[in-house]
Picture (cartoon, helix red, strand yellow):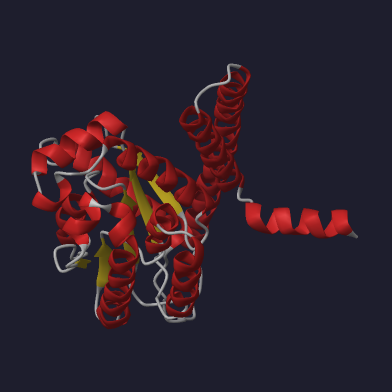
Length: 305
């Protein structure tokens, strides 16, 4: 484990990743790592004609992201914390939306080979927003190469991100709904985000490596230790309540999925309901301290046996 934490911020185009990274980098004494979109010479052509320019755009991004992260992350973490506005893993999400057939097969081989060499984050901060909010933010920043973005593409990207984060297992995930979260104009909103991230890091997501120092406990130390144990018991009780609350929310989302299926809803509504169920299930597992992927593999091996 590196000496300093590596925080990655993820979310759909326009959700506010870069803004959050810039605001938090000083608070965490962290080096910001910002993705450079403008260097991709195919980007404007891609938004005008996705089918024609998808492969060139995707491969350029893959190699550019690899070069930046492979060079910057290890060097930065040797001297201070790091906070980035993207992960290397998310590159695959875009590829599966935009590529297919032989092009996707070539991409996957290259991505798999490169991903092994990229350090994983200590914490993934996921920013969510509704489609209307995303479109409004994209329009407000008015980047020339984003003016041709279609609403359907952003919606498919939003749903794909929910699925991507729900299945993400490289590190713990901390999610924020940002429709009503104004971290630029509201200092209290920014403080809340900052403190939740600090809490996530201190609760085992990242811990500094400390030197071993022999200690003799005094009576005061023993009393303090007893207080800490009591506090841990309270945290465990709160975690149990969180698990129950997440389970109740899961049952509601399953009901929504059932309604969508029985009503023969549009495919997009069914996909959104499925993504919501998957996200809730992952949060139940996280609250219960269960490695869902490992539990599934164990169940499958027992079933086959």
